Length: 373
Ligand SMILES: [Fe+2]
Ligand SMILES: [Fe+2]
Image (tube, rainbow, N blue to C red; front, side, top):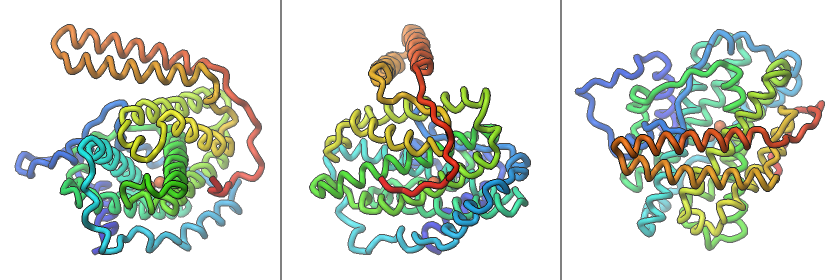
């Protein structure tokens, strides 16, 4: 069985199995799996949702664009992409220790988020009857299983493959109502595209910074993520109530949450960005720019990521995150107290970022976009 087929089967099985039922008899997971299992504000989670509501979603108002998208999924032009030439399988794990640690953590966080998509989409495919929804979630689960399986091949070179079967049972599932799933997954697909294409353009221009071969796959890979984002864009535009009125407040919230999480997390990886020849702040601003440009296809409000107070607030969140980590490491009553103080400070800064002016623009009549960055 090809690696991704196995990953897909694991995700599908997760839809029916009894979750959080890892018995004491099951072998204890390796370090990479434990890292993937941890849920914090900064790590990818597993989601579940109201299947009946998704089943009731109609795409009739955008039928023509929807059929075009389905034809692309059907054509499956990345079918052969996620296969490694056999000669690439060795020697890639010889990285300096600090870089190795950050890169390893990056791969584990990436595989968790790919697999999180895979599990959610596979579950939806299994539980809905509506043909449009069944088709789209089936295609997307297929793609995400390839992505997760591909990352695991490289992790296995480091001797630290993530046990995805264990993860489906042991990791906590967070319930999100469908509209939140749409906002969050749309943004994570599009920001995933923006992140991968920005790295790919850098190593294309500066091959000397390509410290690991996986980056060579990023260009075609991120086109999959772009297409997944298009699916959510069409679903939301076909159900315009999701994009109006008080929902705009949620839409602002999700954009900020996704941007702030990424900024803080990327700033914990100085060695990896140095090795790629990227300044993490400049890189993140570029990703905000691309993501916001794309998001105008669905969101009539986008964030003022280029406002000086925006960057200042995000930098402040990084400092608070360091304080929270120090408090956690200190432990005891004082440590817990200081963690509480850090959380309150972070909430305050987040609130101020939320209240910054936003950019408003009417939604375009043609929804679909091309990945042209
Ligand atoms: Fe993916
Ligand atoms: Fe995706």
